[in-house]
Image (cartoon, rainbow, N blue to C red; front, side):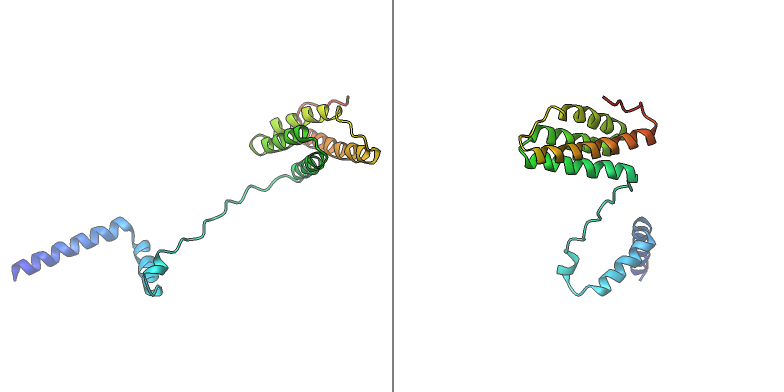
Length: 152
């Protein structure tokens, strides 16, 4: 009889230790989960991963990124892979360091002046997209109070 009481007390102490280690909320949640589940396959299902929501971007930064995407897509569609890649890389840098991304875009915009398209309508569209991106970059430069955007 004494052995049964000692075994019961030891079992109760071990169970209390496990409950303390796991935590009372987790125990209650797991017991509730076990009641709801009807079998082992439901326990083995993958839980949907949580999507990490990026921090909200400044509207002017969004405008720069949209203009950069438009110009890069247009350049790529017209066979100008190198400038399109440079613009995409500069826009991607803006997520880590906005100032360095803006400076990279500014440098890339200077290089795009060299791009010549034989079709006059396409050349005008290129100029319009470059002007849109240049204006967006200049507005963001002014808002961040970075070094002035050179007009050259």
